[in-house]
Image (cartoon, rainbow, N blue to C red; front, side):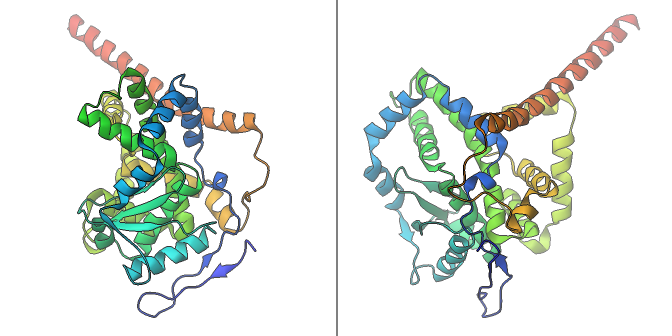
Length: 334
């Protein structure tokens, strides 16, 4: 039942917070409209399928999987037992149809990823495991599981491969592949917004999620940082109206695989305040196998998400240009 609750044992033997098991939840329930819009745009690129087929054929499933996993340790009850226990809770809460393989890779960079083609898996960097507490780490695993359940992993793997090949100057990355890479990066950033929601649903504690984002942005521990100040910073960034800020926001994201953490905090708060999160936790969500909403309705919602953002930037740039013109003309008159 969707209203079942699960209460798990904490790492110190105490009782952990009750989480509602989201039985049969469909990934559509947490997917961000901008994610859907970017994916639709991606699939309309004429050479998209051709580039993907060439990459898939060039590498193949097994070599890619082995390349990712060769320098990592598979999590099990006897390998990273703490991580394994947390992962089992996440799988249960999101009612995952499979226990996808989970690995820990030795690197100080605080990050994680979901990869694969036909057989998805998750990799946690050891820096992430060391930095985060249990609930924060569970959020990260829920986020990555969200990528798998939303069928993001093929495109994410292709993005990673194209980035690596581009950096190496590999000849397969010609103009067509570079165009696909730019579009993949745009979609990839939007897909992160969807899976931030999946991570929240996995642990059902919004403050912990935002504290995790704070840690991922700046490191440190909970005692030396202020979540409230970070939220204010996020709102200031989102609301900044100067045209230079808008230009730098765009330039800073070109080539980036992830949106900035302050943006992700703001996006998640907007979703929570809109009531969708509470409705899902109450059991009001789409189930696997339920018919999709009308295609046109999905497109309309996605297009609105994009058009509103574009209109905001256009309005800001228009106003700034007008101010600049007035200042210039004023200078001539003085």
